[in-house]
Image (cartoon, rainbow, N blue to C red; front, side, top):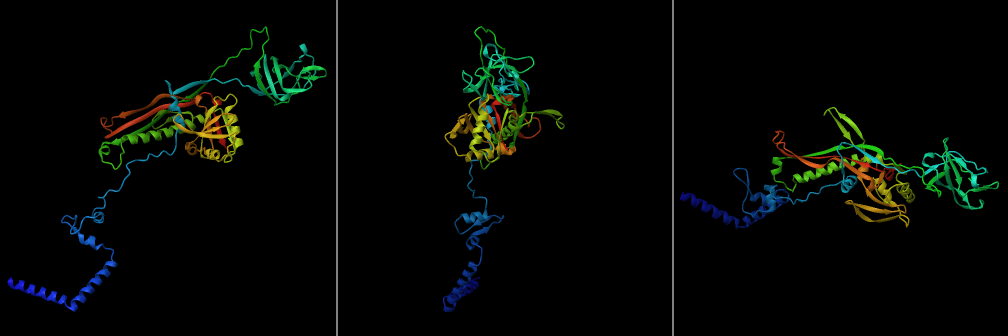
Length: 469
């Protein structure tokens, strides 16, 4: 043993002596240069490789160097956690203004899935002359000749009412000079049809004063107020009967489930059952919005469930008016015409909503506003932000809705009078817990969200479809 140690010691001394010689130094320099070349042409991290040791069970150990992120990522790539934003952005691709408006205003509870409602209309105020009337110089009692005229709607007039003929000139007392529009007075309604009228400010014809001048077919006649005599006690009766309309409540549902193991599992973000419930409710309301707008009222039979399904009718077809404009070319003139149609002819409130698709709203944004048409500030009503638009006819609260785009109404919109929009609920919005564990169905927590409801337009003439053609 001692002999071996002496031999090793002798060999080490000889090697060290040789390395200190000139030849040894040259050898060491050559070895260092070769190592440098190999390092430059290699993708291997010598430092990491030299520091990383494989353990007896296959694990990774670090020896001789401090633990760095490079060594950690090589040995255990998932150990260091990336930065994760624990705030989940709940995407809301489309708003639900109709559903929101109906909930804000409150709903009427109905005891049946079939809703009957009544809408009282107003008596028409204008009509047209059906046949030409040619002026004559017939003598009249008290100096007022009686003329018989025929209109498109004789039934809207009663004796003692006055009629304005805005397209025909009236005359002054001498019956020669023009003085405003012609005014007629209804004397009676013959059983044979038509109206017996006299001219309040008629024309002098062949020496006869107060004659009814010629009126062409199609001329507008405007019904005005009654004019009673001093001894009149009674007048023609007038009663209004509400019109009965009907819609169906539709049962809207959404179900949310979460397994017990999913509930107790650790998560990177705070995503719990309540978050899932919120998303389900939003998706449910989005579907309801489409039914409330464009649904078709029907009863259908489901052959799989062996039951009848009731579908609600949308307010799009319930609107009593329609306005058309050239698609993609909405101008200030179109807006004035739209406002005139929306706010005139017994059209309800002076403030209404205009909810439209992308094409219509884009056209409105491209318009140049003037003193006659102005765009106001953002107004918050019913929990919704609207852009206010003013015309001389009334104010429109404008809102973009992508629901119109999804349903094929890109260039369309609807003008709504919120005073006459009513929601009926047979089953108000509610959630119910399902005990699927005890029933042996699934090991989950579950809820079902339900609402049975419909929307109705109580006064159709106050609402209007806007269609881009």
